[in-house]
Image (cartoon, rainbow, N blue to C red; front, side, top):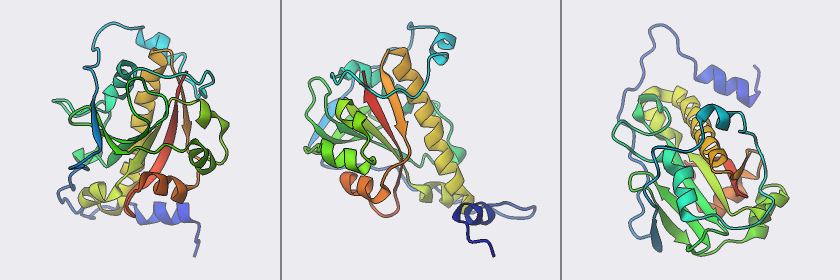
Length: 229
C-alpha cells in the first residue's frame, strides 16, 4: 500500500455517499487568562484607501528590506480581516469552526514591547505571552531566512484541526489548512494596500517554531508571514 503521507491523508479524508459527519460542536478558540500585557489596537478603517483591483495587481511575496518599524495603526489594518465581526470574520470557515490561531513575534512595532503575542480576534487586540524576541533563533527556525532580521514582525498562522474535526471528522484537517490559506491571502492584500512588504514562509523547522511559540501538540504552525517595509 502506498505510504506517501499526502496520499494517505487524502485517502483518509475522502467522503463517500452514505457517510455521516460527526456534527459535533467545535471546541472554543484560545483564551489567555493572564497575558503579560494586552495591546488594544485602533479601530480599523472601513472606508477609503486604494481601489481593490489596483491593490490585487500588486500583491506578491516580497521580503522586508528596510528594517524599520511599523505602527500599531498599520498592524490594526493588516489584522482587520481576521477580527470577529457580527457576520463572522473576513474569511470563510467551514462549519464556523474557526481552527485558526494567530501569533506575532514582534521585533519593531511602535509603542509596543518586543516579544511573543497572541492575536485575540474577538477583542482585536494583542496579548503578550513572552517578552523575549530572539532574531537568531527565529532565523534558524526559518532555515536561515535573512529577511527575519529586517522584518518588523513575524505573523504566525497556526491550525487547531480538532475544532474542524469535531464537525467534519478527519476531513476537517483539510478545512483547517484551507482556512489558513484564506487568512494569509487577506492579510497580504491588506499589507499591500498599506505599502508594506509581506512574505509568506511555509518552509521552516516545524518543531523549532512550535517551541518558540510554546504551542501544544494539537496545534500546528502552518505559515510564518514576514511583515515590514
